[in-house]
Image 1 (cartoon, rainbow, N blue to C red):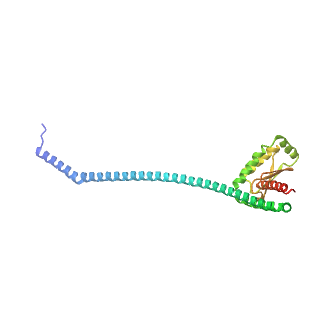
Image 2: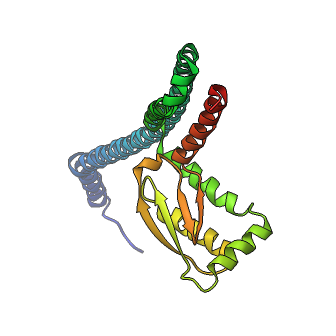
Image 3: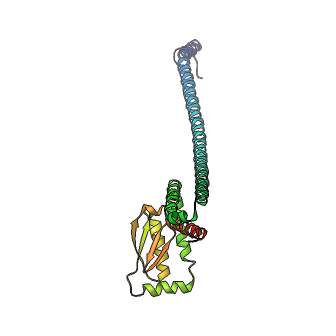
Length: 256
């Protein structure tokens, strides 16, 4: 039968318990405290990182909102500026038209007060003065956009030429070098040059080469000579047409 030394066994048990208590107090408890503190520190660090990430996301959203708002405001400002510019341009043109009408009316009243024979001798000089003033006013208010619109209208008008007249152009250009002498107050853009080339080529049914000359006197629009034909929708040509109509009226009025 196995016999135990109970006092010794009890003493060993007490020593083991005491050792556990000492280890718990000196090792395990501080270690658990450090682990707890470390876990708390890691948790705080993780929370801080999450807070910073959330703050960064919020700041990024705020920045995106402000940027989008700034872009919208910039677009609104640009649009408002464009509308204002168009309004001012229309106002300037209207003022120029009223001023021109006023000048023409004053000049007409002045001419009416003079004898018909004086008018017959000086109507050309008077017309040149009036048209010079009109040309200066129109040139001052004419924009590149007006020129571009006239170029576009010119190309569109070519496609409205009646077929019999188209045949005349083609007959005139038969056997000749397919070139067109073009006058423009400002340089044509590449797109305008291509469109004009394609349009004239379609008109005479052969590839046309443009010979472009810059002539600021045209003010806006273009003048194109094909063979012996001149197609001109420039502002200068329109002013000349007005001049001739006014001249005819004056001659009729003066009995010339």
